[in-house]
Image: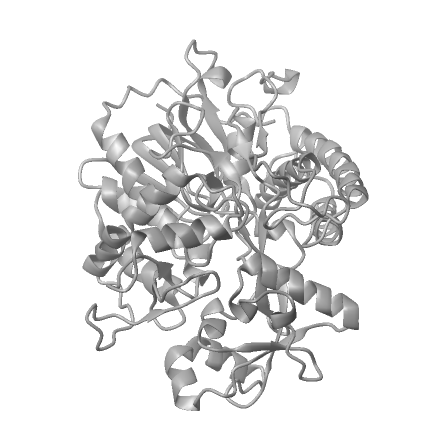
Length: 542
């Protein structure tokens, strides 16, 4: 094969918790490639503060955790999936403990401190102070880097999946992906019998988000283009409490702060959450985010405030050392002052449809983590269930691949750039990126209307036309690949939102404020794939 074509047993696109856990589960007897857009430990998982939900305490129960998840999901959680995840929660946490993750300890019977977050009826969130994701990622990253069977490809972004259809084969199966080496703008071919999308969510489709810059919907967009169905993309979770400060970018104030007694206040000190929900500050994220949005618009204020000054300073510094330090850097002393906060896009609850073995509609292609729609989160994700989902499905996917006899990878073509030229004006990309994020925030945010969604779709179609033309005629770049994926993902979000003629969970419409008595998923099926003239060579881009 060409030097630019490399084959592995398993190709994993994404290096968050789902991707790294899967790689470690497989590496004993599989050659694994782990592709990441930046460094190995750059992911949304690493930014997770609160912790991981699991049934770990004798006072808790599987049924209680299931009930809380179903309640948060507003009737759209798949009960079989929910039970599958919760029943495997303890072994998932034990695996992390065995890997050496330094969770916060205490003198309880279990030996680890458990906190409580919105929507949970029990203390069941295991954490490493207020930087759980970073602690988990650092621990696993060391093991991934040291494993001889895992090849880490940093600064590489997947461009598109390689399928049997594109190769002209009788069986439409996934055989790997094309990836752009961002350092030299060279596209390489990565072949694999099993390919896994673990590329995270799409928070960067919005102007304000708690997600890292890498969260551009790449996996969802690629799977859609390859013929996979997606579901419930309208359910975008807005985290209620993102730090509001001109020098703070995407910094989250963990839900665990409210779990330890923080109150939400208006600038004049008025506490408002009890007027919106009997659970007050510990209501689910959709309720709290909408309440904050309502109060900000009603009173014409730029933010609200989180007040935990009643807790001892030593307690706050011990439980929230990173939040305390970051606030202090910005001149905010959370032990004495209220923290200014606003909602921001946080989690993509919908995604690529999968089963309990992480299979997608395309044979040979799996999806795990935030890119996947498993049915666990329904219309609103329960706090700290996301990292748990990553762990459980990574193990399930690994078991499925290990049990299967992998087929031989066919000869794969290299990327063809013979009919494209260098871009003339890359300002088009940055302008379109900015326009997309602004109108998605304005029209497809916490509160929606039919007219706003119609306006958003009109602008998306114009952007799609521009981007398709640009993509067909110029050499690709990281920014172009991400913009293409963001616009595709935005299209899916708006299409799903337009089809839901009710308000449920994270989707609230002023035109359809009631909740339908029947809960239905919004499922989108891609159009039948066609090969455009400029992409007839399987290695061409387009």
